[in-house]
Image (cartoon, rainbow over all chains, first blue to last red; front, side, top):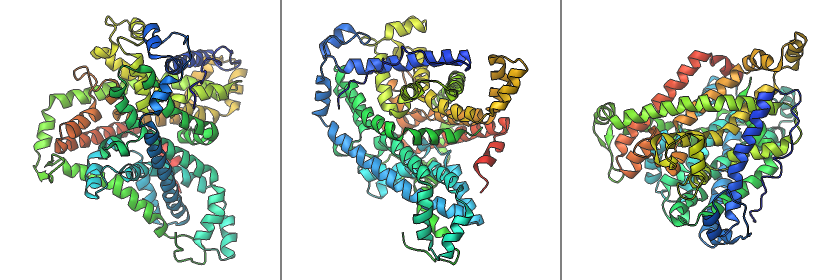
Length: 287
Length: 298
């Protein structure tokens, strides 16, 4: 994991915006600068030593290249935070996929008033802000004796990913033709077999989108870990970063190296799942 | 997953929805009700909550800090919308067209969307640092007298506005990009034949066609802005003074730093009421119900 991402290499090439409108093109270029400069500062700060950073300031070109700041971060508790975050992220994504697929399958295939009600409840759930319920969730987690465990993060985080996941999956399951269900039913297939052999393969795109979304949410989650865990052993990355503010107060390169290290895994995953993420997000808008 | 009553049709029953439903109700829906109950109690987080009647609510009604927090939240929401919407709309429409390098550009554009609010707030806190950061230049751009951006009430508020825009404009850009892709090309062709220029086409075709997208994006923006928390905690800690203490941060401070969880529950309930009221108002004003039908309709 080296921090050599060069964010400048693309900014010089003129994008061809023939036919597209000029104000938007200008906004795009301006926005590229606004996005790229802080990212440049981020990466450039981490590859110089503490003393050069203090002397030359954030916008300077790194004169001597060093990965010392990354070493300082990785020698601390960072690997443990990373492992905890991985556990939380993978468990959340798995839990959300299993629960959302079964809910969506039932909603789509059971044409009853109850199933419509269930779907509406999940739609309403889209609007619940997690801040609004953090106090009762804290009470429940304490009562369940789960306070300060990774499970305390996993359960509510997954619950809050469910509404949008159910929405996405109901959307993609709707596209399966009725005839396909019928032909499987003629073969005497059970609901479980229909789910496994027809619905899951046909909605692979939707399921990946749901997985990407819930993983991203869990990876970046902050409020639930902040309030529901306490000890160093159960700390996740976001919380670790928050603590680094004190720990690396005068060591800006190390602080920012921790920021870079927290983004690199999710960015790598994004490069592979980009299409799923973007399709999922664009599906939100409608016209 | 055991097989549940395989009928001749091979249809699953409602039972399939039960695990997910229970889970959701337990950790998200039921707490909405419980927080309302807790707002009528006195609770320090250690002993059991004790009933205190409407004490918290009377206190809330007369609380200047709360009043200021609601005002700040609403102001932040309004400015967020005014700031983010035009940029996201333009960028989204631009990105819906055909450009070379779009994959590379979008990878850079969307990087802020992938990073956590915590990571980004930390980055910006460093950049805004009065001694080590870019502050002097930033202060010049925003025409502020003090170089300590986060140290001045207005500067800190502007910083929150800017950092959250930096983080969330990519999301709204994507939403607009998706909407713009669905506008039929024939509309533009017809307008070109009539001699309408690019700007004219943008206002006469693109914007009206994106009506529902604008509503969706607005609702997401409003609910988002009313619930900003991570950024505030790291970037400004609600300060200087109370200059950036918006409702969610006030709730956190009251509940988990002062351990007055009963009162914090009242604040949380007020937050839900505010958010719901604003969303409903938007729905009424813009005819959001038309959009709902494309989402529902099983």
